[in-house]
Image 1 (cartoon, rainbow, N blue to C red):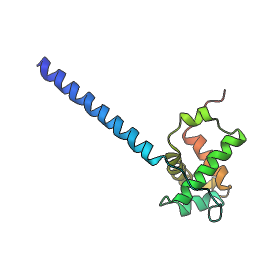
Image 2 (tube, rainbow, N blue to C red):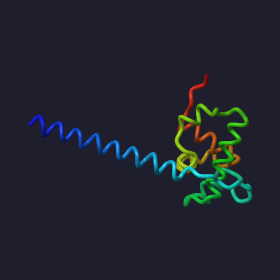
Image 3 (cartoon, rainbow, N blue to C red):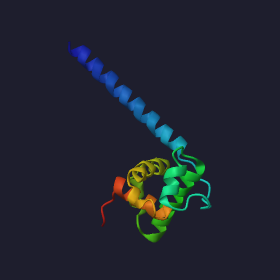
Image 4 (cartoon, rainbow, N blue to C red):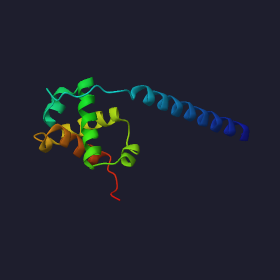
Length: 126
């Protein structure tokens, strides 16, 4: 009985390790360079919600531009960003959050994305 329990635990731990390695590899593969956002089609948060139901490179670029502006403007820090998920995950997560918060739809897209990011993944102020 003890050998069976040990074997079950060993298999479970092995499966968890393999899953963690696969998740890290997937995240690394999906964290690429995002093209520069030109701001032509996605100007306010509702544009982001409307045009990005199927995430495109332009959508990822809009989120990336918002994150860069937040870093440059002091609204977030590199240390805070390191505790958040990947930029692509932030783009998808903020889209979902903004879709449910129509009161933010009139805001400029960068402001809407940063507010959504702070609501979903808050960082403690120093």
